[in-house]
Length: 492
Image (cartoon, rainbow, N blue to C red):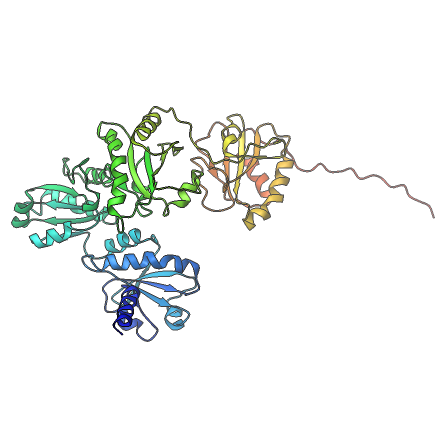
C-alpha cells in the first residue's frame, strides 16, 4: 500500500504545473486576480501548441520568482468556446496579455522559455527596481540572468537619471535595479557606479564577474556599454538573445543545458573561453555556446543536419554574414588556428548551394549560391530575380508567367530575368527573403542596393515596370502583328 501511495505521490509531483488553467466559468474572476498575466488559448490537437508546452511550463516556473511575479495561464478552446469566442481566437496557439482581468495587448513575442520570461518580466513593474535594503539587493543579484545595478549617493544625479533612461530603453534585454540606501552601498562598496553582474552559472576565472561602467552620464554610452558587455567573453546564446551577439562570431554547438548539466556544459565552455581570451588581447572576435538541438535549423544552414558525438561543433559567421565550419575534431589548438585563420581571411566560406546548371541558356537564368555573383551582381546588366520555394503555390502560379517574360526579353542585351530556389541556396545580403515568392530588381552598377518589387504579377505588369526602371530601356516593343493575307473572292 505504501508503495502505491508513493507512486501516486510521485505521479502527482510529475504532473504538477505552474501554468494556471482557466475555463468559461472562472476566466473573468481568476484573470482579475493578477496585475499582469499571459494567457495561451490552445487546442489539444494543435501541433504548435504541443511544441509550446515545455517552453511555456519552464517560463511559468521561472516567472513565479520574478519581482513582481508574473502568472501564465491557458484555456482549452475546444472545451471553453465562450471565452475563446469573446476574445476573437481564430488560430492556435493564440497568446494574449491581460492586466487586472482586462485584455491589454496581443502577445507577438518569442515562444521559447527565455524569450517569454524576458518579455513578460519587462512588462511587470518599473523598468528599474529600487533596492531599499541589503535583502532586496541580495535577492536581485541572485537571479539566473545578467543584472545591472546602479549604486548612487544621490538619486537625482545626472548619472542616476541617465541610468533610468537606459533602463527604460533596455528593460527587455536585462534587468535593472538601483539604490541609494547607505547599507547597500556599504555592503557592496560602490558609490555612484553602474555595475553589470554576471549570473553565477556563467562565472569563470577568465573574466570578471562584475563589470564596471567607466563612462560619462550619457545614455547612449551606457546603452552601448551594456550591449557589448551582456554576452560576456563567451555568452550563452539562445533563441531569445541570438540577435544580441556581434560578429565575427564563433559558435560552439553542443548539448548546452544549464538546468540539468551545468558542470558538463561549462566543461566545454571553459575550453572555448581559453581561446576566447584572444578577444581580451584586442582581437575583434566574439564567442558563444548554443544548444545544438535548439539551433538544429541553424546547423542545417551550415549543411550539418546530422550532428553526432559529445564534442562541440564549431561554426562562425563574419561581419559580412559569411559562414565557416571548423574541420576536424574539437581541440583548443584547432579552435585557435580556426579563429586566427578567420581573422586573417584565410578560410573558404561555406555556401549552401545547388550545383551550377550545365545549361543555363533559357530565357530565365537559374541562379544558385555558387553563381549568384556572376549572374546577379553582373555590373553590365539589370536583373529581375525571383526567390521561390518549390512547394509554394503562389510560386507555381507565377512560374509560367515568369517563363513567358524571360522568353519575350531573351534578346535584351542589358537585362537578365532570373530565379533562385531560396530553400536550397544561401541568399546573400542585402537580399532578404521572408516569404515566397520574393522578387527584387537590381539595376546595373548597384549590387548593394537592390529594390524590392511589389507590383503586379502578370507579364504585362513586369514589362511595364521594366520599361520605366531599366537603365538602358527595353528593345522589346510587344508582339509583332501578323499581316492579314488577302483572300481572293470566289464567284458563285
